[in-house]
Length: 267
Image (cartoon, rainbow, N blue to C red; front, side, top):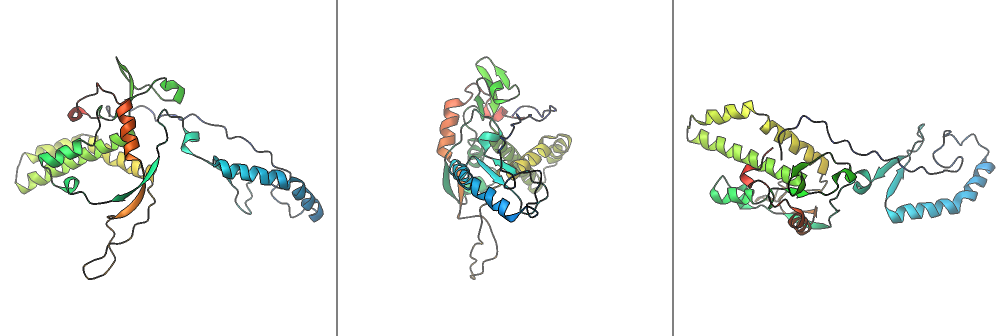
């Protein structure tokens, strides 16, 4: 996924939220206290704006584009606005449909390092190693990508994450094998890991990725042989996931066909 970069983080284009003209004493106003206003005057204003407010409220709910949250009794009357991804950041990558996917243990991915299990992990990266072509990248506020004769390419975060996880798995099983076989050469691998930021980068990158995705699925405990239910292992739990088929189809249509061989796919 390219070398560890010392460049600054991508600066996202700042959007200026549209302002809403609230009637005096009803919405966001410099004076939050309407308790001191005459009750009849307040009721008159409320009645005057009732239909427009109902219309605006229904429009916001039906569009689902902007949610305005105002804290009760707050002294700061500025509304908190929340946006969908498409409003926060431009991207050439479309929104993909969702699907319910039940997590199930997969022995090939749980197994120790073997030619078969290693291949299964390596095959998680698509053709092109997780890079795609992007045209007119500046239109999306992107910093320059990697220039190739065939176009400008960018890494897709999910495949960067899978690459990191695959690399960490490889290091883990190398260490286990070396310790179990009393292979003194494993010390060279250990010193290499201490001397490179690659492993630490992957741990921190995956941390941020998990926090960003924030899968808030509720998991229940498994049933033990004695009937007790106390340990959660995540197996047989349904999750709302991005459609795997849609992602694979998109990558097939946009992948960088002249990318590095997967074994050379690195930072």
